[in-house]
Length: 493
Image 1 (spheres, one colour):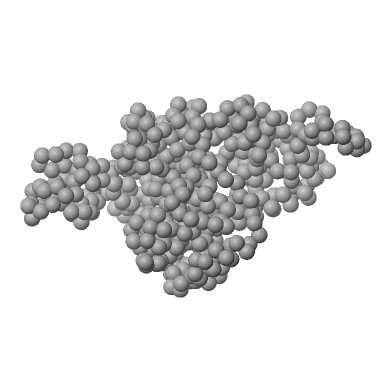
Image 2: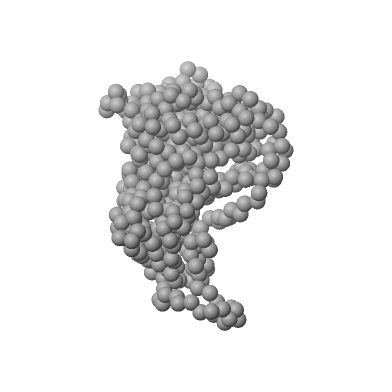
């Protein structure tokens, strides 16, 4: 069976994610997955190609060195912001009316709809793609694409949803890879890739809204009847939450980001023991101690999450599909990992909500973070490239899969948390157990069991009264920040 390799790059505002997969028939094996901090890509669109090219080239060079290959081409995602949608129709009279309508004829009709659509400003806009909404012939109406193929008719018509974005944003993506010297195999519309990675067929059929809480953008993608019906986005995301923490707590941005990753949670009134904890930072002699209650941190995060979610709920109402979302809401992206996030979105939306982890349609070992929500775009592009039967992206074969597996088995074992989809909020004790797991011994000193303390009969030390307490010297906290940053790069924190 033919074997090929697909390399996909997700160009996010916070991270560049490079994924390499071995494709053998329908089997997908991830052989490389790693993140690098991005630059020059605010709000999911390349602003500075020169800056953006540096971490992307570093990611490619590192993958080539580790895998002993040369990456010739990659698939990438198109920007998610500044995208508008329009409707277009196209109609053809067939030259062979006694033959069945073929898939090629449907694709030709789709191309006709795109080419004939009058852009408002062809110098600044470009059509990302067209999604078929329905088809009709002389006798039938509201047929989906699978139903129109095979029908015998003299003519047929298609209704399409066109997604239109900035031409400059697409040119900047091309410029980045011209600088690096790597070809672009194909550009995919990121929301479609995400949906392919996390949504089920039942959800897309019955109606579902996919909310992506990214670093530089937040978006909603609505499927109904297995068709993408609506898309909208705003140029704000997780970075705004980090900025709020920085300004409210008067701390550096890097520290604010790491506090969000380590202690980030929604619904402060439901944190219970977690909400009683206090982070104490020992600064210089002039600054003294800085105390940040985890509950206050949660209040900051919750306020901004509500603003982002309300914007997406407005778009759902605007779509006219709010009453057709029987599959509820699926949340994905980096912010989907916040504690109580799914519970909070359910509380303010009224829909059933689950966290969108990548579906297990692939095999992977030794790559922490590959099953996290923010890996969905990269994996979705891999799946789309496989379905499109793209050619291999490398020029040298990788080692045999058994050799790769032996190499991974020889690595020191790493404990990675196993995430399960969050279908509904867990109440009381179950939820609090999950919250407590955020804290490690390195960061938080938990209250000792009174019985064990008594049995140990050690000299008593003066302890602060009141809530659980975290006391960190500046040097120790600086080391913790560096460790967390390394984990963000290497272990997909």
